[in-house]
Image 1 (tube, rainbow, N blue to C red):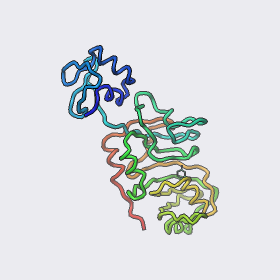
Image 2: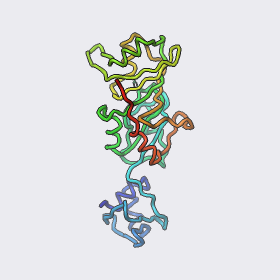
Image 3: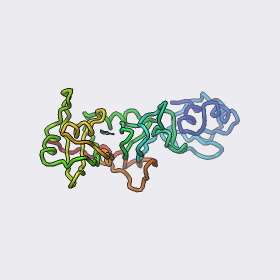
Length: 239
Ligand code: URA
């Protein structure tokens, strides 16, 4: 059970103060009855809340897919740089939204933004084995030795051992990489351990969910229910 004013705020309809006003002005109904108390408690999953005669399409959480551009940081706030949250249109903004996992400032591509902490945890935890797929362009050509090194688990200079990763050679200096961890600068450091520099990095897939090719960089859209599930549907067998 949740307070009526909080429910209006959570759906990005208004501020807490405005919610109180709307309710006291008798503009809000619950299951057909006018409610005048902002602290009225209800189950938003089962009750119909109407504002000015219009039923709310209550969503407990929001799940967004963004095509992150270069030059913005994967954070909720930053003193210097624009954040991915700054790019979200007002219609999708909600209290408590955050990027589920980070991409570096210069990395582009698929980023999930949500206000659902459990969902984000399932997505990010290495134990859950949700593979993230990246397209990389390098300063040198990776070869079968690089593939093997990734397969065996790259060891960083500080002795951190990465979990096995899959490297698919695309010819020349291009490759796909799949990892299920999210260490700081992980892909760049994995290639650096093989004496290569990443020139361009784009995340193209998370679990079974591919980046929507219709989304331009900087744009986002809501995930469908199927897409929210498909993320967790694919677990790649790694050696
Ligand atoms: N690995 C990196 O090095 N950078 C990213 O942004 C994501 C994975």
